[in-house]
Image (cartoon, rainbow, N blue to C red; front, side):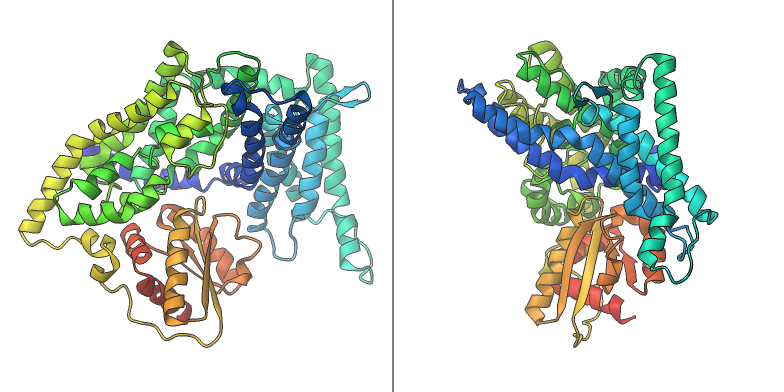
Length: 554
């Protein structure tokens, strides 16, 4: 077992390199930007469709209005994502471009939308088809969003542009500077779209869906599901945010499947597509990656060791809402040989059982998307449209997860009890215990006279909110002029100078070099922490404030 753990750990640099890939990050950032749209549209579909489960049907006029809100939000997702992905990729490319020769990200967004329409949207009598503007256009959107910024990069980097006299205002000069890459990108996709359709008889958007259809089917099988959700847990086990690596590669499948399921159920059919965002949120990751909800509950209520009991009780509330970094770093689970097997295998087993219910017992797969912080049993029931079998599956998964973790939990608990009896001080106890027992992180720092602003970043803005709230609470208690907020990594790039300090959560540590370079270029302090230190800071507002003040004082 120790050899296996060491082998996994030696692969961490490779995992971090994958995590830093600007194209995967662009997909992730683009999707994060569109999450409010997806959730907004899902609310209307819930209102439109859920009453039908209870034999109530809206009048046709009301139903049409509700579906209209969905069609003009989720139905335009391809258009929205091509723009947001292209912007994220452009921002990443700009970090390596000369400061006085940057790509205009607004121009890239506009041109990407035009190119997607040329590539994947067919003209029809009286207008254009909207079929590939939504989820069916996502694969085409990825192609466009990856290439258009690189076309701009080719021309901007070489300063191939229309040069105007110095007297011309900058904003007018910028318009002409964008004209050559804009024209080339549009012409490339215009010609390619025409030639491709003449050669194949299909629009590129329809063709690429057919090409990737076998991958969609394979990913939805037992082996594909095991690879996807096992990989997420494996990455997390070595301390890297697994979903941020794996999910960008399957985001198109996620969204296409949930849309297909909704259409099937609306037509009176049986929805069988397993691989969706809600499957990840409410089945595979009950309580967060590794399905840690029941493990956390065992730590909180039946553990004999002081360490697990303190960590479990401090973590049970956030873990219930799928924020499980406190238990992952506090127990710890990361690089803990005893907990390796249940952490990796439990998510796989959960998804397999869910697939069995769908394929063999006639249960509908997920048709609605809810916020990922919805407690998993509730999300499972609502997301499947109140399927009767969901009321059986939800408690069954909890029992299964408890059975999977229990023997390993007992072994680890006994080990910690022996250490505590022997008087061994465990670093995790000191750093993950409640505030009154926590060891000092730094000496009390002097309260500044002027206002300071702190930004905390993580993959989604959930884990980072815990430290941001602790810093804010500490500032309120000591009447210090310090404000702190949390964001998902990537959302900070345009507002770095609005802050005095930016702190990166430990699971995103692989991004710290990039963050540090961005911050140094703009004169802003930056820092990251270890997992255990981070958990300790979130539990102690006073120490969290001192931590931030000490960093800003350097």
